[in-house]
Amino acid sequence: MAENQIVIFGGSFNPPLNSHFSIAQDLLNEYKEINKVIFVPVNSKYEKPGLINNEDRYNMLKLVCDKNKKFDVSRVEIDSERPLYTIETLNYFDKKYPNNEILFLMGSDNLKEFPTWNGADKICEKYKSYVFRRDDDDIKNIIEKDEFLSKNKDSFVAVSNNILNNFSSTYARKIIKEDKSIRYLAPDEVVNYIEKHKLY
Image (cartoon, rainbow, N blue to C red; front, side, top):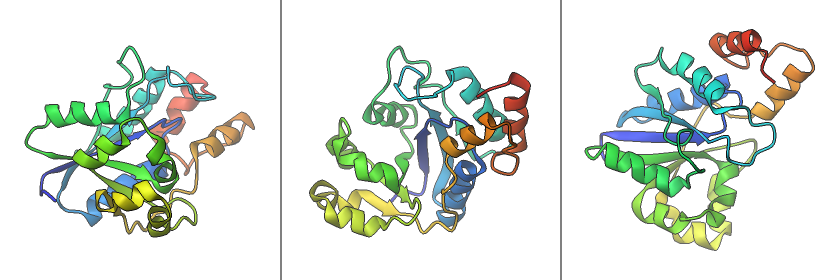
């Protein structure tokens, strides 16, 4: 793979947690060829229960990303008039950064659903994806058991991540609704923003 990679990290980030940023930093530590990780929050038009508005999720990401020169956050999906397919988002960044190799970052939970995604075959043709492990998932086993993933196995790079993303945003929202603190689950900037704007 090229030595000038940009990794696209899409997600709800509802809210963004320490685990999201730790995984991105772990990836940067592990693969020196990565220049930047761009966080891409999904559009709130995307039908997902409990998804708060675009601006709050973008602002929380930006507060953290502004403090790391290798992190960035993009408005490409939240400013779109309709939810974008992942292939469209990747093509956008491919055009925006013609001198870089664009890669996608996803969890093993998304990998299981990947064969059903719109444009999954085109993603595999054109891009590689870093895959980090969620819970007790075996990435190699997930790929081997699925015909489509197995056929495109060279498109996936299993990340030997030391940081497991077991704390979910769903769990964080549950804690907030119970009037409990998510400090140490999320960066202070995110915790303070949630408290200030009384989110969730």
